[in-house]
Amino acid sequence: MKKSVFLFLIFLSIVLLCRASILEVHATNETVFFEDDFEKYDVGTFPYDGGWELWFAGRGSEYQVIVDSVSNSPTRSLQLLGHHDYSAAYAAKPFATEAPRIGFEVNVRVEEIGVGIGEIDVARAGFSELAPRGRVHVWAGVLFLSNGSICIGGARNWPVLQSYVADRWYKVKLIMDRPSETYSVWIDDVSKGENLDVTTSAGDIKANPSFEIKVFSLSQNYNSVRVYYDDVKVFQVFELNPRLELIPTTGLAATTVVGSGFAPNSRITITWNGTTMPTVPSPLLTNVYGNFTAIISVLDQATAGAYILKAVDGIGTEATATFTVIPEFPIWIILPSFIIATFSLIVLKKRQRTGRQSGRIGYDATSSDFFQCMLARALDPPHRKPCLM
Image (cartoon, rainbow, N blue to C red; front, side, top):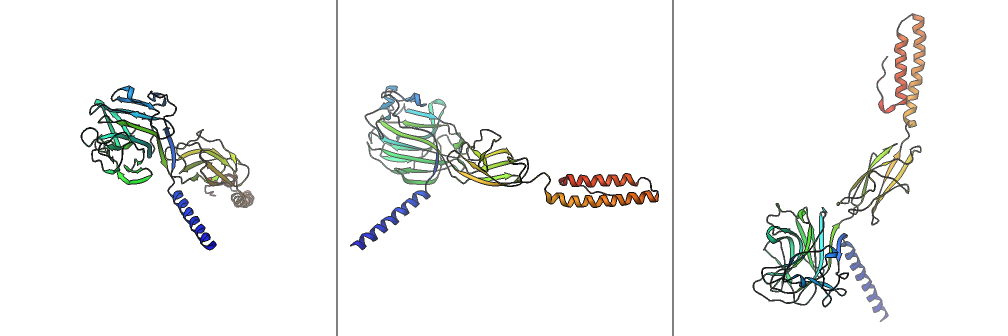
């Protein structure tokens, strides 16, 4: 009996470790642009104070309000209600980013199914823009149809993800890769599609790329069915792979620090053997791709040796590189030049004596030039020029 219990505990530990490993492998890093659980607004009001805009009032502005009768967490949600087939209710929140990978999460609840006519979307959530003549363009929007299907698509291809039932909350998550114009989608944390092609109701995706996205919107479009939204989050997704490069890696005065793979839009701190360094520019921030470039002055110019430069972003991601300080006149350069200069001085004096004895005219000037050339070679090794007699 004891042996069985022991073996069971070992098996359970292995399962838990494997599960933890899987969760760790699939973990993603996010920068949140905005999130809203609608708790800070008064019941019966529209969340203008949170930066939301009411593009279209649907059945009337009095229906596009915060309610406490239905919620996912903890007590309030946003209710939207359109007016039959010609007046949608649209709540939108602008955001601006050039981030290559963006996503959203939202919980959706539809009050009724099968109301009205046609298989049309009664709830819609996604990235969008307000177009002329009272139209809304969407990119890979998630749609809850009146027939009980959850679909996706910007254009009217609407591939079905799964079915849904009335008066139940569904968690929708979508991550879009803008450079490749693909996306992945989850319902209740279950994958429903990966690397699907982004489509848009604006037309051809090449003429209307997802980099034009500037708004996230929620709507109740057709058939006058109350829809509730809660726990909205719009974010950027990124991968951490911090690297640091110095240009040059040796010297005396300054170096350029080039970083990549850090958290996007994050403040960077540079240290030199643990001492915080001033940078140009200041403050130093990564771009939307997690990259940065800065110039720093060498801190210990008088002491030769290797020094550790470390870059740390706002979430603690770090990378290091080594900079080697070389004195202005390294001994391994000066010594050979000094020997040559000394030997040249001996030759010079000998030739000067020979020139005086032979009565040659002009030799001293030539020898003097040669000597000055050799001194220049010794004092400025990086700019050596041949010295000719």
